[in-house]
Image (tube, rainbow, N blue to C red):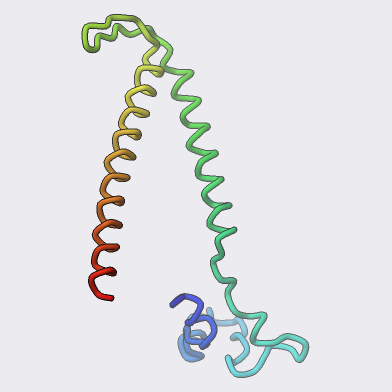
Length: 132
């Protein structure tokens, strides 16, 4: 909300700092109070606010890059590895063994995080009931 508020109020670099940043020999930008040409408005010169869709798009790109890196990792680590766990013995590709370890760590983190969130929600609910 604070980010959008700054865009709406027009706070940003002042005209003095904008002119100081222009290299010599180039024209300075139009003053902040007047549009560059009669057809444009100050609304068009504002930066585009960050939206949920843009964040989701960035997240999809990040997930795609991580997935490609993970596939390359799995293809390069196919050597068989001896694994022993709780009396079980077997042979797995190294990448698969590491994948199982990673998923186990993620699941453990999710279980502990869910328990903590549930604990905090119950505490907040009790406090709300006491304050009524």
